[in-house]
Structures are given as structure tokens and as C-alpha cells.
Length: 207
Ligand SMILES: [Zn+2]
Image (tube, rainbow, N blue to C red; front, side, top):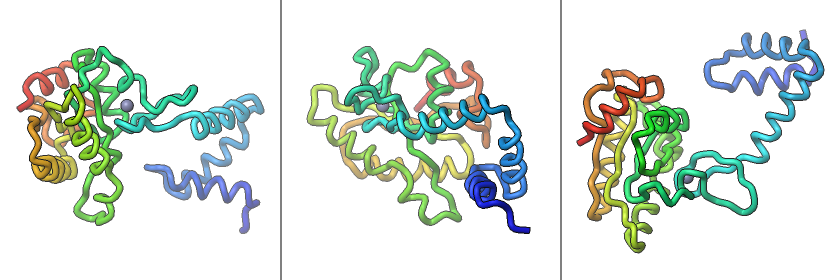
């Protein structure tokens, strides 16, 4: 049967969310439809706010609430952080796990994805070029980058990406160290789900 357009439209949008198939998306659409009005209003407001008030940091790509004309996130704006060390992570939630350790004082770079054997376009989707430019630009300042930590999950896609990043970073032929998280993260495990102690060990044992 043909569903009313608003129902079908939302279900189609939700079906594109990671981990949701068309059937689950449709079920979720009907569930939303039956929520009390105040919950529906909240959800609409929160979605609107998310899409209209959040910007990506021009340095590290972490999302932040842009008040005034700010272009940098809280971490990149913080003079207490060590801007000469950049920790490259796949995604926002990895950054949050590392921040939770309270041990890392450098700044970050969010790659926005990983390379994969099957997705040829993945190379275009990651923020490698902005990272290279960011490092090159830093060389002209008083605080040149002295270390880039590759903190991707030790999965097959993570390893593939680490190798690719390393090659590109070395090609810059600039004077900075490239390190990787040390032992402790289980093979195939993910940064996001590692506990703080494991992450601290992996950070301290980086080489
Ligand atoms: Zn930032």
C-alpha cells in the first residue's frame, strides 16, 4: 500500500542512519508519531538546533556550538593545551574517550572515517588534506607541530588507514615525529570502547 508522504519521507531518511534498515526505520517513524506532543516538539527543536547551531572546528573538525564568529572548538581555543602535538582520531566519540582519561594535553584531528578495501571513495572523504595543510602552516608559527599521534582503532580498516596516513605524513618531509598508540588496545578493538586505563597505557606507550 502507499503510505502517506510524510511517513514515507521520514522513514526513508531514517533508513539512511547507520545500523537502521527500512523496516526498523518505518517502525521508528510510527513510534515517533505516537509520542506525546511535548516530546515531539523537543525532538524537533533538538534536531533543528543540532543542524543550525553546530559548526565544525576549522582546525580539528570537532563539532562545537558557534557563538559569535568563532571558528575553533573549545579544545583548539584553549591556550593551556599543547598545540604542537596532534592526535589523529577517526571520529568524535574516540576523542571523547581520550578526553575522559584526563591525561592527554595536546590537540586533535578528526579524520571523519577510515579507508576500506571496498570503498574506493573513502580516500576523498577523510580530512587528510586539511591535516597536511594544518601541519605545514604550523611550521611557519612559533609553535610548529612536533608530534602526530595516529590513534586509530587496531582493526583492519584502522591499520590500512594508519599506513596511508603515515605515508602521506612522511612525504611532507618535515621535522616532526609520527607515533602510534602502544600496546594494550586489543587487536580488532576500538578506541571508543577502550577503558581509560587501557587508553592511558596506549598513549604513554606510544612509539
Ligand atoms: Zn578544534
